Length: 99
Image 1 (cartoon, one colour):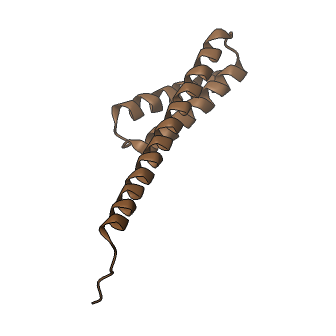
Image 2: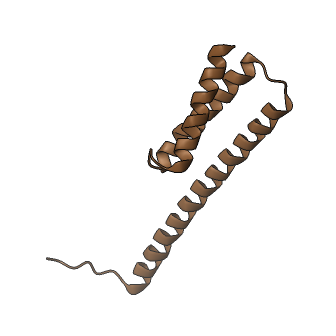
């Protein structure tokens, strides 16, 4: 087995580069998730300002289903938040069917 002849300075630079890359990737994921949350809250606020009609109910259902898909990517199907969101999706489906 041949050992690579890499100087300590090169190893330090490679290590710092790897840590910087990891930090930047976590930062990008965090910012992306925060933007999704802000967009969700803006849409929710816009829905609450308008009177309820069938189009608004379908829009609410679409957003709730999207939120459920996002939650299922990060939580187990038995997590309380997933169960609560799934229940609200079912209630919205029933309201849409009634209208």
